[in-house]
Length: 315
Image: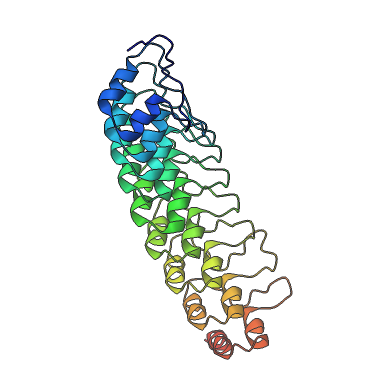
């Protein structure tokens, strides 16, 4: 296909090379001819930094992707200006067949992150692409705990969105850091509790090594967060969990409020009732201002809460 004076890598008026055009239109015969041409640069990036392989993987064309992946000199990890690799692009967009092709290449870096720290596994979790997540979890060397610049890991993301199937799959990975926190100090459990994802909360509470008292940057535990946000079902699960201390005040909790303080201050009478039935609850604990939950309930006019606390105190 060599023609005197013809540059096989020269871009057209739209900035696209012949190889990019062939990939865009899925012209396999033309693509194969171009790949045999002397001087062809299969990894040449366009103005946006995308290589033909990255563009094809992001668009989800496995037929074209397979041809490119079998070409001489192909770089399966070359990223665009944002650090997006072909694997990351395919995982983000949910293109399972393309992901399979990329993982078949030993040189593909399964953990290569973009400029914001997003890994292929994290992007697949964010997109809810369960089949791709399962595929990645079986890849040699996969980092299940790799987090982005905000400290969001695959498990943290899945717990935040309440995807119980993804959470279950991630928890099956030996050595996963179930208590790893994001930049706000929030753990997978605290985020699941905050958002009211009861099925995820149950899974985590039964996981070996889970930290029931882990605090965020404000000193809030999962139980205090659930009481604050009126997550009744979550509170019911937490107070029955092994290792829970219903009176615990996290370091950094500026007011010194227990879960019962929170529920009483917010006027959550149904949650107060659950807490009063929990093993070891202490209704007399005082905060940094010297007030017990009953003091707050009276002060704020939460009569039903006050009645429950007084009845418990008499019993």
